[in-house]
Image (cartoon, rainbow, N blue to C red; front, side, top):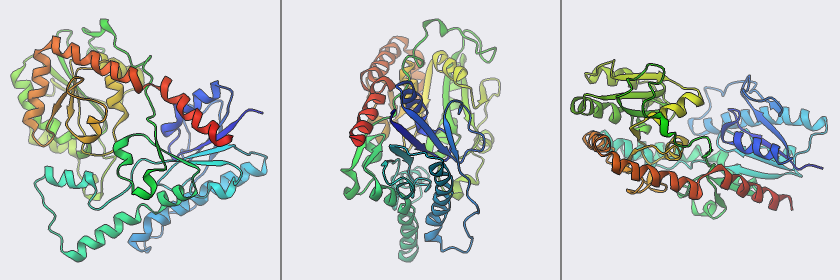
Length: 411
């Protein structure tokens, strides 16, 4: 009988799409559980659809709200999983994205299955990302001791669903060493650091892309400065990138900035989410709309074309979860300008990219302009970035490593 595996993620397929498709190609019976109403690309897979029956109660204690939300989500998964079990479904392995609670009770429904927790972040106070953002804004914590303790209580409480997953897990996966280092020592030694990997065959350089107009978006002779993001937000250095653009555009009349992504905030608290960072940046900086182009979220093929056309690709992040997009840009052979922060340095050094100080937009501008002015140096760094991916960050390498872990659990 073929080995069977169930991936659990609120947003199908999350980090598990490539892995699920590859395992299916290897003969595994692959299923997904998700809260997505109409999961795209689900054809051919068993889908266990779950939906919380109610929202968390507004009167719940603030420290208990993350657990309340996670428990409701976990209960929704249990109902869908029990229905599948009554129909005879018995996975050998359940892999759940930890934090939102969907897989929190998977062990109770499928006690015979091995349980794997996929862990991205452990919340601390102050969080390394939050402290970094505060320093960028020139703000030092001024809270009194009672307020500080209350904030720490709220952050610690956010970890409860993750801790429950880890306590039940037969194995745990964390994609980077930087992320694993955020976890307490009691859990850290249980984390297998396994990156998701990128499709280096697809995300590969295209020598003929230099004059691509991107369907008329840029001129053939333009020097294209690219920035790709899930959300235009402080965690990904969007305000600093926008602040660097006036100097870049003034110094190089052929420079054009192309920004891909949604005008949204994916990370951070309510105070960050209430701000329209795109509108604020456009109000603060005098930018020629003909030279600063926003594409919105791009389909994969268009996103790849953008990376291949790029003359200088900027990726910025505070110390936080590293975006897939940085590794994809490395794989595509981009001339990279990167924030000199810990998650970036884990995978890219000065031989593979120009590293800049996120706190100083002037250094971002200098890094971009130096990259545009030095094609030979950029070519060397492009090759080094691509070689780094090929040496250890490809799906071809990491998918078998995850399968080996799953095989060991089945054994």
